[in-house]
Image 1 (cartoon, rainbow, N blue to C red):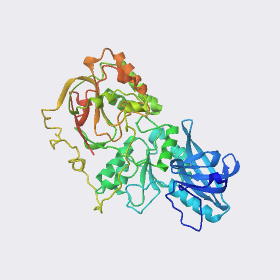
Image 2: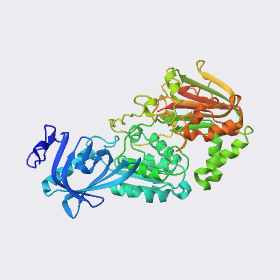
Image 3: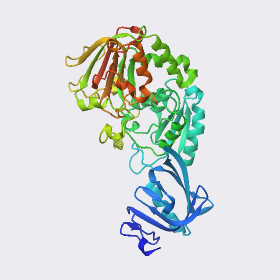
Length: 492
C-alpha cells in the first residue's frame, strides 16, 4: 500500500491476530478482488465507511440499500453483496463479488459488513432477540384476481434474494384477516404483509387492537404489497416492487389510528379517511365496474358529475372542534409538486417507533372498540360526546347542503390523488374539507376540480373549503338516510 494511503487514527487495517474496534469509522481491506455484474474483475482497496461500502473507483453501496451478504459456496473466501441502488429515480439491482485470499480476513470482513448493514430489530421484540420472518396474507380475488400474480412476479423474487423467510395464508372470507391477527404468534413473526386492498389492512389493524397485548402487536411492521385499485396505499407493478424492497429493509414509522363511530356500523378503527357524499358515492358506485380496474372510478365519476346537482346534494350539520393555528391552516394549500422546503423543517422526518418495554400480558382479546379507545381522544374536558348527545357550546357548527364532506387522516385519497399533501402519517390533527353547494358556480366547476386532484389544482378552487384543521372530532348529521354518516373520531 502506498505510504500516503496508510490508515489514520480513524481507520483500521484488519489484523486477524488483534481485536478490531468495530466502532471505527472506516475499515480498510487490501488486495481485494472485485467482480461486478459485468464480470469485470479488478484488484483494489475496499473501504467500509460509516454509511456505505466503497469499492475503490468502482462505486459504492449504501448500507441501507444492501439486502443480502452471502458466502459463495464454491469459494469460502468470496462474498456476494446484493443491493438495490437508486439510479435515474428507480431502484436497480447491483451485485458485487468480493474475494480475499486470506480466510481469516474474509471472515472478519463479512462479519463487519453484516454488522454495519444489518436490518434493525423489530420494535416489538425484546432486547437480545431477533427474527426475519413475515406472515403474508393474500386475498386471491383482489385486484381483478391479480394479487397472486403480483406476489409471484414482484415480491417473491425480492424476498428470495434478500433471504426473507415467510409463511403465506390465503384469506377466505371477510373478517379472516382480523381472526389471523388476533391469534398471531408475536414471537414467530416480525410483521404481517398484505397483498390485497386497504380492507384487509384494516382487518389486520382491528385484530391487533383487539388483543390484550395490543401495545406490542401494533409495533409489528405492516408491509402493504398491493398494486391495484385506487386505495391510497395501493400501487402498480413498479410500486409493488418498491414495496417489496421496503419490506426487506423496513423503517419502523408511526401510523396514527383513528376511532370512528357510525350510526349503522358502530365503533371501528380507521387509518385513512372518512368521506361522506359525492366521493363516497363514486367509490361505492364504482364497484359495478370493478371489472374495468382503476378506470372504474373515472367512469362512475363521469356518470355522477353529469347528473349534478340532482345527485350529491345532501343537507347536513357538521360539528367540530378545531385547532387555532394559522401556520397549520396555511400548510393546507401546499401542493405535492412544491419544493420540499415549502413544507417546513422536519416535515419529512419521522422518529422511529419506540421499542416495546412492557412486561407479560395476559392472553385474550377484547371485542369492544369503544373500550379499547376509551380515554385516547385527549379532549381537555375529558369527555367525547356520543352520537346521542349534544355537542358542547364551544364547538363550531356548519349547516347547509353539501356535495361532500371529507375527514382526512392521510395525504392521499388514491395512489395518484394527493388530496392533502401536507398531511403526515402520525399527525395529531385531522383535516376537514367540504364543498357547500352555496359556493359552487356550476357543476362543471366540480368536474374540473375533481379531475385536477392528481396535480393538486383542486386546492386553488375557492369553493374547496378547508375551514379548519380538526383537533379531536367530526360529527355529521345527514338529512338523507340512504347516505347518512353520523360519526365521531378520536385518536390512538
